[in-house]
Image (tube, rainbow, N blue to C red; front, side, top):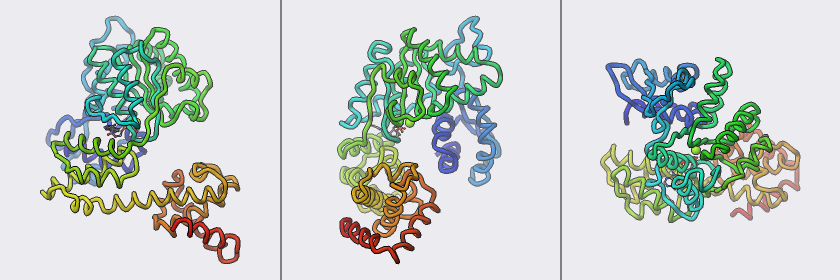
Length: 434
Ligand code: ADP
Ligand code: MG
């Protein structure tokens, strides 16, 4: 692992996942000179962002990690597309090399196709072969870690090879750039930049929720590109209908082209993904180990990858060959946590049925009486029956704070002492869960 990768790893749990994927992932290790680490970023906007927002985190990382690095310098990646003559925008924004914005690992060749993502893959492939002709816009959606970014960037790679002018941007980057452009009176070049493209790829578009000015800007960008028959691809963690606080006119445009969703992969697809990822690391994963991980990991592909990474790291650090027994040992904690997760889901299921609400209501933000009490009961049972930790329970209930969880559990413990009806319900649910 190079020093930048170590720093990235250090930052991962400390900054928000959005900031991480928008700002940290696209930055690449360049080189080290004495005690200075050089990191490549796609453009000036990134440099500014690092200086304004991450200076403290980076300092902290340098102090915490034994890297022998004193300082980090950010280099803007050289522009691969020659500047258009006379275009005013060039004075302010350099045209970023499209490839610098894309992760080299996210290509079609490395994407495993299975029933869970077949449609999204086929649609992406069609767009990559026939931009602006096949489907415009293409709207990919599905839960986190299921391969949306991978597919969007695969389209980007394919079209960059054809020398089309592409721009890949996360919604947070777009917002940040827009705010800076407003602040420094550069809206004209901002418009130029986004409307003189052949292909616009926008990731995590659900983050436009509630951002009126951004939505307006997207609306005009969309119209300009659509009229010019330029391809647009959006990725979102939910369908346009499910994005709250989204203007109707934008929602309907997102639905103009083709919408394709991604689901959790099935067992066979998970096995294939693990084998392929290991192969990319130059390791042949034994069938039974792949099957073990695939059958025990119930989450998304990113979690699957995380398990594999740990296994590969352990094996390469200790020299121990990858075998089933060794994998069980190394992944003990991870697999046990997965097991608890399944149990948490079972608890949510029976509690929801008992109180005639949907399991999703238990995870929602709502604090209506109708869901608060069942949620407390469910949290209590998760603690009792699934032996889950407070933070684990909090996460499984839509990201509640662990103190909220504790409070809920205590509430139930308290009222159980006097409330006969509650005792009856708890006994019934406990029986069901056994
Ligand atoms: P999302 O954008 O949907 O949150 P990503 O595209 O970032 O998810 O995918 C998370 C990780 O899982 C990435 O490393 C990606 O390469 C990998 N991944 C997801 N689906 C597949 C797949 N079908 N084949 C190979 N890798 C995949
Ligand atoms: Mg993504």
